[in-house]
Image 1 (tube, one colour):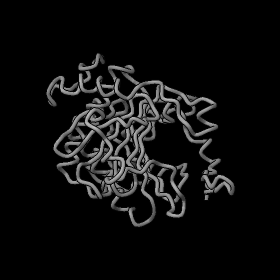
Image 2 (image 1 turned 90 degrees about the horizontal axis):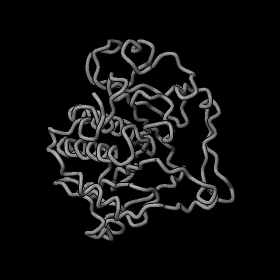
Image 3 (image 1 turned 90 degrees about the vertical axis):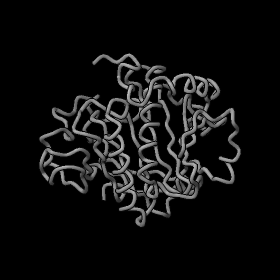
Image 4 (image 1 turned 45 degrees about the vertical axis):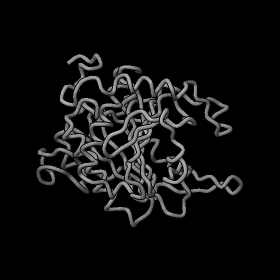
Length: 294
């Protein structure tokens, strides 16, 4: 096994020792001459799931392959599309739906094996090493405690006041916690509580695809066309998706104390998103909406 979960005996915090990941391809370091996720590489990667075509051919829409440099017992890469350059903000809504449906299928596949954690890195500052848009899924052993915020219907969500809500749809509430750790972070929470992400319906996925795509487009206005960001999906009950632009770096105070310094009032994020969310209909959202050239 190329990794090991270790617990600090004093703090009880967990770390993963995974030295092999230091040799993974990294475009920023010039260590790759071709993209392993692009068309034509299908026979070089063992697939565990795909949408479109047959195994080994290039007629696919979404592919899932094992991560060659894992840091968990199950570690997969979900390749968003054959397009090396387009991510959520530029892909058709139907393609974004296929990606989110793939998340659901993989979550359902692994939910009885441990804690299913789905996360997306975009941009070098986010931790992305290969720029072809992709998401990662890991299954973390149940005995490893995750240092992650839990959103409980009877606790945090009930404390969300009207002035914290960015937008509401038939299925989701978008809000910015007062205790946001990062500038412009937004939480997307289903109105139907008590569910895992694996329980999401097709109608909810259609709605989530539009909301997630629109938020990323809006932040493109604020942070620049190729701004770095992360999002993750909470692995337990009462799931939520937390989107975090990553223009800000962590300093010594934050690393040492675990206390984040947020340099922006969440109310600014709320006002900005409210101003831009409804601009243009769903069919009019395109790269031109936020100044990208064709």
